[in-house]
Image 1 (cartoon, protein in one colour):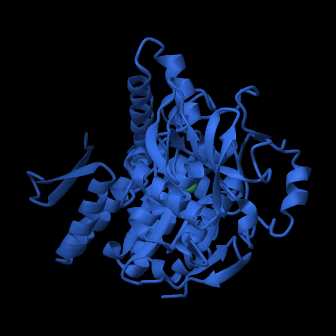
Image 2: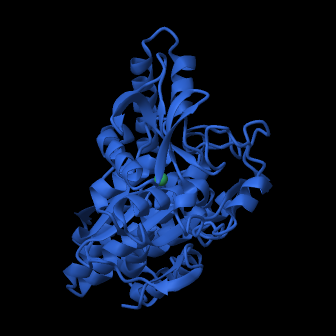
Length: 461
Ligand SMILES: [Zn+2]
């Protein structure tokens, strides 16, 4: 098998991937904050890292990969949504309603997109103790301090205490310049404008947990960044192989995760390779609610808001993978039409005789998950090699049996009859099983006059 090469945002180069432990390859990807429907920009990392998960399982074995994708279920946006949607309920109950409903919706969306379930899907609120413990360690090591902010007590990370803070986002040593450039107002309780919240005090109407810091109890809630440091440590250890997410997470989220984890654990890295997928635009424009081009996964799958029709999950998935994950994508009706045409052709060719070697093309995926090149090479495959290749991409055809035309099905039936004539029952059964996977059920009978085998088919429901 060819070497696996991955682009590392931290070193800005493609590197040969060597896991810390081949028996347990570990990957963490930042998951959704559950307060609203996931949009197609959220869908991209879920799909991209699902392909990498499949590739790892292919290379190292299904039981030798641990994939963690969290759910952020404590966040001020969730509180605001709970107050808006359930004004008559106690806040904790309202929050639970919002997070449960949104998490269920997210699961339904990503299942329709053909994504495998991650090994673990931790929820931030279940890891509060781990967060409190990391924060206390940071206080012990002088990487954090407690201050009185406008909204009450805060524990803050001291960015000046870390020599290589800013390395991931290429801001190292330029902290002051960057902060001024971004016109961040210096809040007076902070030592430096870039210092960020690890824990903040909660008031009556806000969710909170009791945290003890330097002997002081602060009823409060965690900052966003500390959540991922705690969940990744608990499930993957102090260091692990891959940390992924969208490009927009590099700064401040991932930069701050590195600062917290490395300073608390005394390690020189959090993850070996940092991977980020590119932005998603819709019809040539940045997605925004006010421009009316804000597209949710749910809308694409279940409504006719985009292009006047519903789109099958596998079409959305292929449309996403037709572009290399680090490039920006322009999501458009044209692109979805193109993906649907490719899928219709592939679905027919899966039924044809075996041809080609899918492993010959795995090299494309091994080269920094080049799914677009991989897809363009599928033209030379058919039969089982093609369906094996599609398994690696996670593109399944469960819902496109309508696209299998009669001619293709009849051709497959003729081929199967020819195998029977040759007494090659294994190949005949393979064709029957593959058609069944496409939702086509074969029925064998005998011609009453000639006694010859006659095969008919029906769409299985
Ligand atoms: Zn994160």
